[in-house]
Image (tube, rainbow, N blue to C red):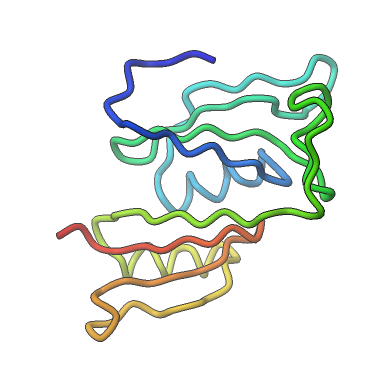
Length: 136
């Protein structure tokens, strides 16, 4: 894996059902920038990718509906189904981000409000849970 001198202690690694759709969603909602994509030779399957959202980097790869890591990546490691990802992310404007996510097909979970500490939540089209909050 290529490491671009990360200034963060932990780098989340997403296993997603459709890497291309995940890229489209995160670009539109979070203005994400794809840094690197490695595909399984002869396929469109993403075996490793890196993306920047703000000043943070995330890694991701395609998985399958049975929760496996993909062909030849994690050996025989399997789960009994997908384990949804939950990500907490600070954004410039929580309401704009929330509404943009809903417009891009996310399912509303918690609408941002003063009562919620200006935090909102939604589930993206790939079933990942995102909690967004305006930077303090």
